[in-house]
Amino acid sequence: MLKNFLTAFFILGTSVAADATVVPNSLFSDHMILQKGVAVPVWGHANDGEKVTVRFNGQEVSTVAKGGKWMVKLAPLPYITTPKEMTIMGENKVSIKDILVGEVWLCSGQSNMERQLGPRPPQQPITDWEKERDAANFPMIREYYVPLKYAPEKVEDVHEKWTVCSPKTVSDFSAVGYFFARDLYKRINVPIGIIFSAFGGTPAEDWTSKAALEGNPELTELVKNYDKVVEGYRPPGKLMNGLYNGMIYPLIPYAIKGVAWYQGEANNGNPKQYQVILPNMIRNWRTDFGQGDFPFLIVQIAPYKDMTPEIREAQLKVTQKVKNTALIVTTDCGDANDIHPSRKQPVGARLALAASGLVYHRKIEYSGPALKTYRVNKDSATLTFDHTAKGLHAGNGKLSGFTIAGGDKKFVPAVAVIRGDKVIVSSPAVSKPVAVRYGWANVPECNLYNSADLPASPFRTDVE
Image (cartoon, rainbow, N blue to C red; front, side, top):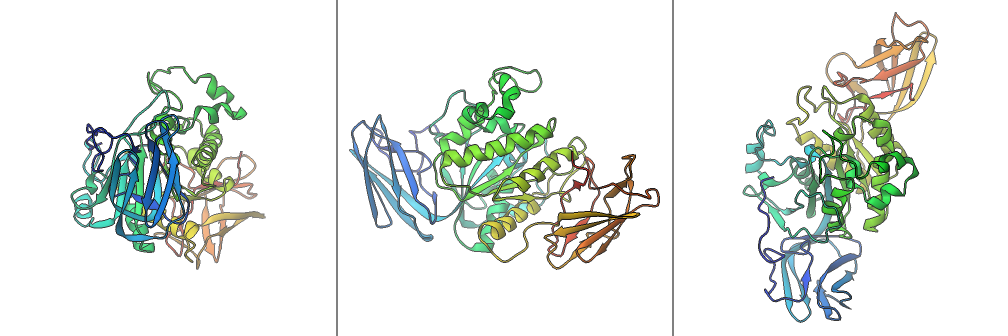
């Protein structure tokens, strides 16, 4: 990443004396965005027994440090768009400036979330990145960057800072995170903070705490290999839960609105197990942050020659089973020969759309067509869908991507016709259908959309 790691004392850009005894966690630094409408924890270090007082927006809350640590909670705050200052006082005084209150989202996952807007050879550049950079004058959007770190033990502070979005800074922002924040800001017009914590090539179990892994009986076999170094997959130092320790635990319990999650490539080898691992991780984060069942917006893996339809199905199933989640379908955003597609704008736009509908309750369609029912009629199958908005349509030309099979389970290309909120599927080669699949390929060519121009997820009716 194009980031300068901090070498100064704890917090760069926040007024803290060199001999300070009261030191807030670096999440609480100049330009930060606090979450609106919930209790806001503020914490850090101080001498044991030292009284610590936090003042912000007319509130004053005090506590006494125990074991060198302190934490207070501010009462829920309104949106604040005019910069405010926070003071933290003990034996010294800390001043934190240019604070806004808005919506804070944790943007996490692997390389497609980690990829920043600016150039990153040898990867292909983000589409129109220079144009996007030059237009990125959004002082109400800020990013807190979490450095890449596998850690054997829990890390308390990553000693980083918040950065205000501008043409000079945005090249280092997560591309997906930035497009999500920008489009969400345009929709709801309040400050948007993104916490950027992503690491390429990493499986979901590495983002899960050891206790959550060991506490799930369905993951017993996985945990047996907890400390095992597997050649070509898990090199030394990259042990399970290492990213939870190094890149998630330091953020807990910072008040957030939800999570944008773009990951799954590293779990492609065992999609069935992923249907256990990902819900387990979601449960783990929700429990540890202690802020209820906050939303998870899950980006589905885009088409790529080595990514199976089963991993997309696993992501679909997770959103069907885990409450307060949404699936961001990307069947039209992929590159068959590049695991890192360059068009990140549609991903960010659909994340913002999902947040607007699911989380902020705007009356909009935020999901693509979702299979509702499946019925066989002699020589054809009828599929009905939810989330059709004002109707279904083929994205370009003739509806494609459907296959059909009879009792022999041999799937052949099908003729698919849209009728209202239904799709009728048939083939002259199949007289008695038993199953239908849509977009069932590593690189699917499929084009079923609703009137909101959102694509349907790949699916199959012969679910294992």
